Structures are given as C-alpha cells and as structure tokens.
Amino acid sequence: MNNLTRFSIVLLVASSYLSFNSNAEIYTWTDKDGKVHFSDKPINDEKVTTIKPRGNNNISKPVNSNSQWQQDYNKTKQAKAKETQKNAQQKQKNKGYCNQLKSELALYEQGGRLYLMSANGERSYQSEEQLAAQKKQFAKLIKQNCR
Image (cartoon, rainbow, N blue to C red; front, side, top):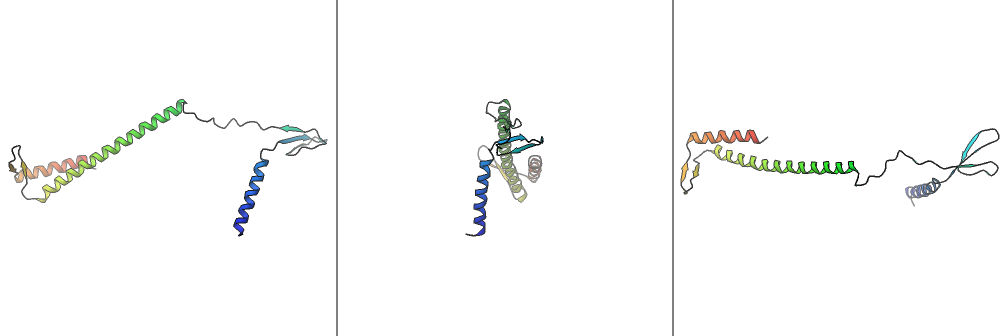
C-alpha cells in the first residue's frame, strides 16, 4: 500500500474513534484544596457530579412550508419567475420585429424598383420620394424599437 492509502485509513479510524467519544459525559469534582477538576472519566475517591450540556437555543427551528414568511417567499419567487418569463418573451418578440424592420430597410437600401400589390393584384411602383420616405420611416422605427 502506498503512504496516502495508509494515511487515509489511519485518519478514518481516528475520526470514527473520536466521534464515539464526542457523546461522552463530563464529570466534575472539587479536590481537598478547593480546586475544581473536569474530566471525561469519573474519579472513585471524590464526590463526582455529572454535567449534562444544555441545549443550544441559538439554532434556528426547522422551516415548515406553512410558515408565513415561507409562503411570502414562495409567492415572491413565483412572481419573479413570471416576470422574467414575460420579459424574455417580450424580448424575443421585439427581436423578431427588429429583424423584420432591418430586412425591410435593407430591401429599400438596395435600390431598384419596388412595388406594392393592390387588392386586385395590380402592381403600383413607388417613386423615388416614396422610397426615401419609406427608408426614413424604417430607420426611425428601428431607432425607436431596436436597441
């Protein structure tokens, strides 16, 4: 066996031995000179008193799901989750809208003849002024909605 394995075994045995002694009782007595002694083993010749440790009142009580603050915490957590989800959906929606606006602007910036279809299927070509106005409109919408 290598040294690390031996050390691990010794450490394991020592810690298990010490954990058994952690529940040992504490004994106290006063000797004939008036000096107070403490030990984990009682002395037969002296009057020994067993000390029982007091419970620690500083440890918080376990939380049950019915406590008011736990209910408030859960409500707040759910509200935050809904708000986050709503913001993510709105952001995704805005992203799609921005991409659409950008692609429309790119079409107008390419130049050439662009037309709009009427309800009866006829093409109506846009003039240079109309194209410039549309470019300006798309640029304005992108500036307002896409950051």
